[in-house]
Every structure is written in structure tokens, then in C-alpha cells.
Picture 1 (cartoon, rainbow, N blue to C red):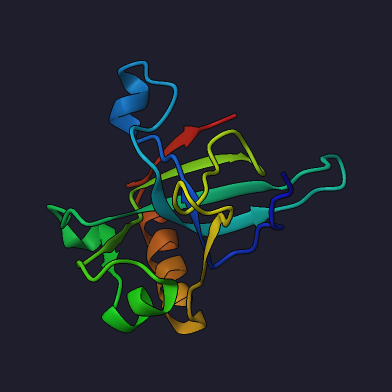
Picture 2 (tube, one colour):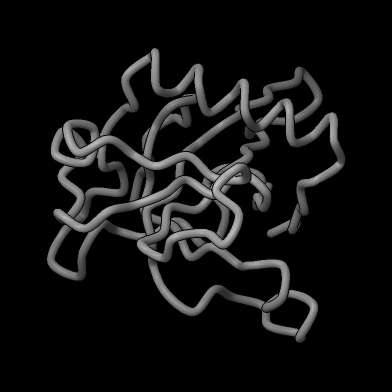
Amino acid sequence: MSFPAPAAGTVIAYSFLWQNEAQAGHLEGRKRRPCAVLVVVTTTESRNPEVVVAPITHRQPEFDDGAVEIPPRVRLHLGLDGERSWVVLTQFNHFTWPGFDLRSISPASQEHVYGMLPPAFFNRLIEKFNELRRQRRVAAVSRD
């Protein structure tokens, strides 16, 4: 199976591993969920790029300053369900693309990508992510 090239701003289907799950010894996330690709790093030494993804969840975060709600029009554009959703920016997974945890959007689909985030919304996520990183309020889980 071939995978699409990763691009910052893409929303993919992925088995995200939360930090508390990793600390409990889990090796895989509990479910497939949409995740936003925040960063793609390519080097001449590596054949495959390194990717940073942030999870998208229906669960409203306790502290809204660590997540950004996805506007209804963006959810519709991506084909997500109608429920409110947030991009959590206080946790991220990083892995070598395509990794073992890239999933299809649904069991009946061969697609791995929901779509691209609009540039203005993606820029808002990156600004918030960088702010949280400067404040040392992010947790990384390596998936390699």
C-alpha cells in the first residue's frame, strides 16, 4: 500500500498514543482518530521525513488554553462529524513517516487523509503550539 507524502496542515487518521497511555506501558493508541500534522522535517540523512501530529478530540479540554476548537465550517470541510472538536496542542506524537500507526479513515476506506486545514486556522494552531512549547507545556511521545 502506498501512503501520501506528509504535509503540514494535513489531517490524517492515526492511532494517537496519549502520554498517560505511554507511561502505563501501552504501545498503541486505543482508537483511530483524526490528527493534525503540525510539522514535517526532512533531512538528507533520512529517506523518510519525521512528522509531528496533534490529536483531535470531542472531549472538551479542562484548560481551553491548551487546545483550539475546530470551527464548524472546517469540520465540515474535513468530513468530520458534527460534534464539537478540539485540536489538543499540549501533547503530540512524533514518528518517521508513514510509521506503524497511520490508519484508514474508516474500515471501508483506503484513504488515510481527511483533508487540509485552511491556512489561517493552521497558522493559528502553529502559533499556539509554539507558545505552549516556549512555556514547556507540551508532552511528546515518540512512536518509532
